[in-house]
Image (cartoon, rainbow, N blue to C red; front, top):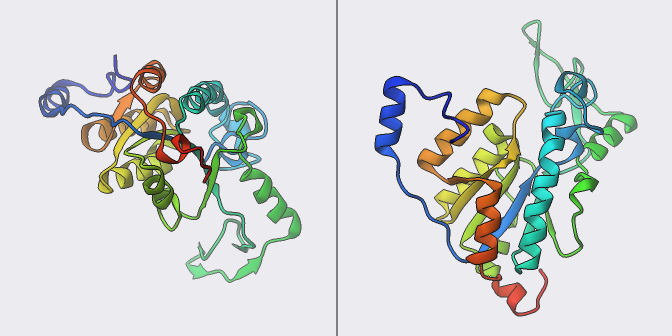
Length: 249
């Protein structure tokens, strides 16, 4: 049963099923773990209402529940010679609004000027952008720093994938409705096969998670389970060109 089954009803369900198109995965995949950092899961597992008090972008304990599943996928990927990428937000000196947040904003109808963040605020952001230690990232894995939603936007990701001969991107991480969706759409636009692992993605809103997966499955990506992802890696995936040649990017 698809995770979005309880969202579709009546005519919507009939239309969705009638328009369903089989999607395929290629032979040379790469796994990308999107933004599973402390800013998106919190420093410790706790309910999201508590977690957002420290990092307002956090998805809370639902993110921590996905971490061992993501790690299981990346471990098998490495065993099969499949490259593993991680993305996180770039940490640069930044300015904030006087009322909080980053960049220009509105307060009482007037634009508030920007001011430099304090050293403490910058350190808080730096820690938030660290990839969660429990994922057990390995030295050969590649980290992509990004400034937008899609991991492709303004980054060398596509160059890496082309160099490795990758034709399929297996996408996990967060948030389903944000950076996961944006990356899957861009992968499709770039003529890559895209697969999103439902068990290994998460969002702070359940409805956003379900509807985003439903929409991605209809238009841009093949939504699969962790079990399906592991089986694909073990039986169908071929090592990347760079890995097969004993090279490291």
